Picture 1 (cartoon, rainbow, N blue to C red):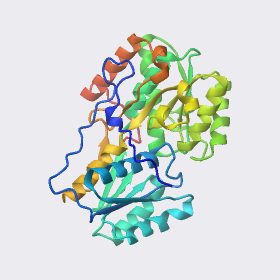
Picture 2: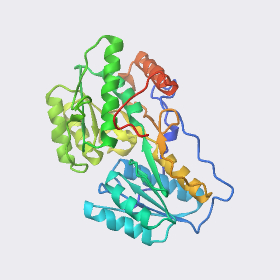
Picture 3: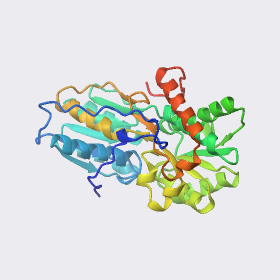
Length: 355
């Protein structure tokens, strides 16, 4: 299954207020004079969520398609449908003879490491996981920074004083969102003297509400219904496709959704557009393009790419249809908070912060 070649780049995202950008734009990758080369090929291996997961598989593939158009190279994706596909698919990607192998997600860490060690002349990149190796480039994102803004936003718009979150699994790329989210709510409470509560995550104990799955949409719906039953009216699912179940529950019963990884307003079915408050973005597309460019130019390194608010690797999507629900004063506070995080005046911390 191949996605449309029409790519939406998150580097162009601006704040929904139309005033100041909440997301710093990453500079466009430089195209080296000798970069274009049709003899070069790259292969991507998805995790078990599949290619059109409305999450990091989809964003990573969009980045590889962008690189194909930019540099005139051959790209393809090998889709994993379950855990037993993972290691064989990485081996299959290596067998293509392509110079760069891109893998997506923590599930592929072990297979990526093993194949990189066995094939030192090839280059590997892995999204959302820190894997060591002289020929492995981790692509990770400090999503807690953008989630902090999302938590502050959620606390500012809730009508019930209760917001909720849940994850697909208790893993660093998931809990990093949740840590930032609860800290943003806490910051709003401190600033405004409010007592907005977060259901679904306890940062101190690093434990909370998880579905144990990233694909079961029905489970996402029932989990969200449980949060709605407790009067939460803004929900942050960090669970890949499972989050579509959250959207379905909110659409039926009311409330607002905060999506992750890409702009849910654009990637979720159109019927859910009216409930998407914002999305916590990872600019995976531009990161993938830059890594391909560097490899073509002979500048590949194993130093991790870490997306931040400062370099445009993470950010918030526009408020789209819910722009009127976000007061101008709250937008101004979010802009000021982002500036303070970028300046280092506010340090968003998490045990899962990539380094």
